[in-house]
Length: 204
Image (cartoon, rainbow, N blue to C red):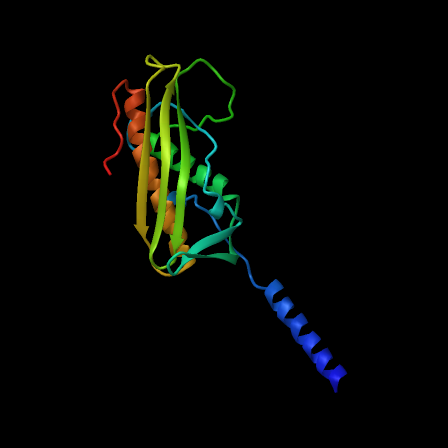
């Protein structure tokens, strides 16, 4: 009887592991669908270079990291980013900036002596609470290189909080909107620098 019980226990454990292993994986991207982000009608701005983006270590995981209750967080094993989070944020921000500036990200392209806007983002918070909010907070800077005023620069911080509905799709869409709003703030400053004006940090 003991042997039979042990065999049943072993079989149950194996089935449980198999169920976990076969749980479907869902992948998400922060790059918003092209149809959801209409192109800017403004005059094209200068090209820009978006430097690598840093993200908080606690959310720099393949899985989505979400808040639970007060200070608790959970790592969602079956809900994953399609690429490392820092790359996802950079790709999304690059696409949003290209749309906002009606320009091109020339990062990694052969250098030349033409003016370019260099943009840097240090993301300090990337908070996710399904059914509640998607929040980002970060320090960013824009610098004009090789223009008429090559020393022109601006450094700011932004905090953007988007309300989201239930479900992980809604949560990711909230982060897409937050990054789009951040791109709009950065683009406003970048365009002013490119036009020789004195930019200011966004209110709040």
